[in-house]
Length: 166
Image (cartoon, rainbow, N blue to C red; front, side, top):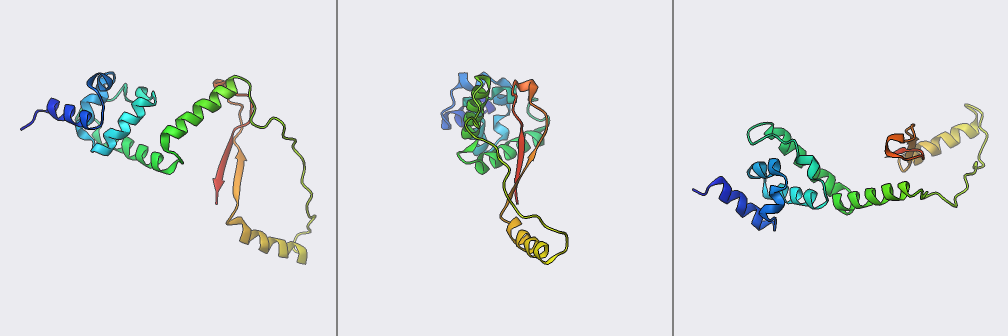
């Protein structure tokens, strides 16, 4: 029967992960045999993106194994649900943080304005009509909520928003 070391070395070589690369995060390297091959691929991707800190405090095999597997299940979901995957997410986040640090504002040149609209009186015919139209259209709307705070800890002076597509 192949040893654990041989098995780990084989898994790493299959993914193009060199021993020195994985050994830079020994807590991850010790746990690689617990993971399906696709999750080892996600670990490699995270390491290549400079996310080795995620594995610094991992326990050895046999401790919190369900949590480790759950972590990679979540990483897999995030990677498949974000356009371009987590690599794209991290790249975009780094660019936005660098732009923020440099004082670049993505909204420069925009001028806020108050839109014109209807003045409605509760329960009259016009109100009822627009309420019915609005209920039908709300299914296609996205809502943005200003989350508050200025992100001072991150050095960001603009508003933060949370969006939710319905």
